[in-house]
Length: 154
Image (cartoon, rainbow, N blue to C red; front, top):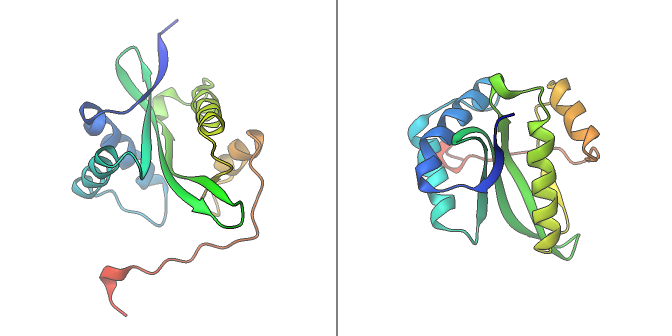
């Protein structure tokens, strides 16, 4: 049985995480893989641990999964919350319970650190992802996501 661990990411993990984001963004309709942007974003999170945390799932020393947890404060909850911005297990490692393992680690960490909620956005037509999050206790929100890209004018 391979050695599986969940760890806080380091700058040395950035290339592997960027590759996982490339895989993730090829699955999502709203995003396009742009390695330079992904590396810049990952390094920004690592440089500012008050804004978020990157976790990696490793098999031996190989990164096979990751989670990008961004920190916010909810006025509705009256306290700190997490937005799960990115979550992926590599295609070759799916179906082995690793996604559940990583998510359970997130829930434990979040509770221990006083977070009140974890929110995730999922592609509307990604049925397997919907099923995955439901099985882990996520409930569907009535909220709809809108975005305004400041670099695109208006």
